[in-house]
Image (cartoon, rainbow, N blue to C red; front, side):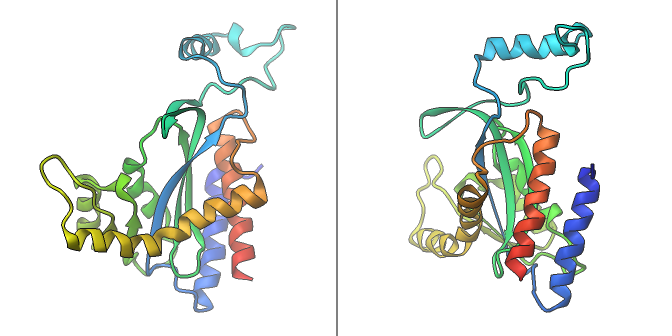
Length: 229
């Protein structure tokens, strides 16, 4: 029954208590995202649009007996592809402290949302103490002027991996830099691996984003509590 805002405050309080005991959580933040399977079976894009339009009507919010729906299929998930394979579901975004591995922020979006625009949101959600974030680490999917500008404006060191662009290959320095960053940002991939293994988090438990986001915040609290003790 706790709201998302309340859960965020609870998580922030826990992280502040760890910070007060000497666990620095602002030295570096690694950001990444992973796909989450929908709690409902996949349907075509056309059928999904039809279901969304129906849900906007009064009739679409009632069951066969005319009562308000207590359970309905997931219409907030959508389609994307990963390594050429289609995926129907959501995407979980996370920011992890690179020193102790605490989960600092988590967000849920439809699967088709690109990772890159959510870096500023994850970094903003990682600010739990008065100490500013010192450096952000991310893979090539986050490379681009918007995120580089965000880091520069906020005085955050840029640890985003570089990728080759049209007419400009990576230099030897950039290749070496990417390898060095990969050795640090692995902690966020480690977090995803742990929750998949221990919490079956590769699939959504609920059929709405808000409920899955709340579930992720409970998981954040449990993960950090375990991590810190």
